[in-house]
Length: 408
Ligand code: FEO
Image (cartoon, rainbow, N blue to C red; front, side, top):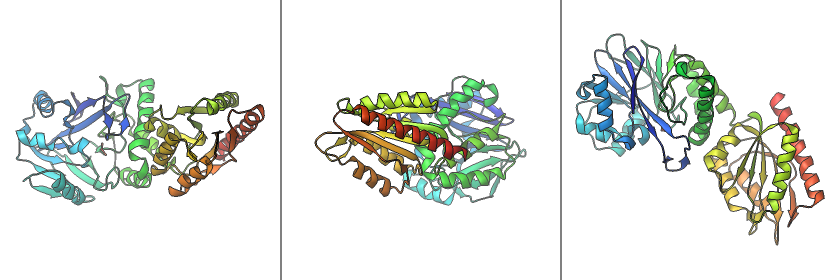
């Protein structure tokens, strides 16, 4: 856990979390950083909390000590977002000091009452309400519902131009010793970009329409620094992460990048033979592509690739009249995240019965995904020369369509 200075009178407390499934669901191979912030005016406020995976409250109090902040001097606990990765520490915090006021939206108040036993005063705020901490630190609140839960808001310190948006503008990836964009190399920034795509597609993607609205609201503020609840702080170039999030939100309806994601599964290697052929074709076409095998690769990784790809190739056998089950499961998740309007193609093997096509179309309809499919190629048993030739032609056609769609 680290305590660092963001800017004058603003400090970050950050803890890295690894070896968990985030939200009990998503693999995070590079971990995640949980960030909390202190603003010291004449009064002191803490914005969001760090969850209890790292010995909170002990480690938190050690850090406050480093910053020469008496926990009992914290008058305001600002809860931007009630998901327990940010609010779950409240119970522990109360063991040390109970004399603080909670600041949150009306919807968050209802959730606090549901999640915690408390006797604290709750100050309910709405759009554009302010809280004066003294020494010029007037905090302004901006409701950004559904980024990520309906009760979410962002807090803006008008003196330093620091926006605390909680989940918005966040990323996966632990923080080593450098947690500010001005301290990172371009390669390190690129690492957090990739982590931001995976975080966005796994956690926030469903609410992309609300993300767009939130960005428009936040853009009206004179932002100098973006200090999110996860990932690095954008102190040198906050517009970079804003523009990245604009792009990620736009990928929901497409077109996304000039990329193709190949998702495949195989029972006995029949479909796999054609997959190897397709990878050769994609190489020859010199298009950026991602390959994921199901069920081996995690849903989160597959989702991130599909989110940035304009084209998707599905390769799987029929299994008992249906799609190969792990492919169905990942497609359901992609549908729930609302990855719409992809250009797509499917091929695969069958033995004693077909049925995958019907099952696939039912999933597409269930989630109104509106994927535009080229005619599928199915082969009985192993793919023959003619099957591979036809699959290759379709893949080349898909590449052409993807390029035209992205560049039109
Ligand atoms: Fe980082 Fe929606 O919680």
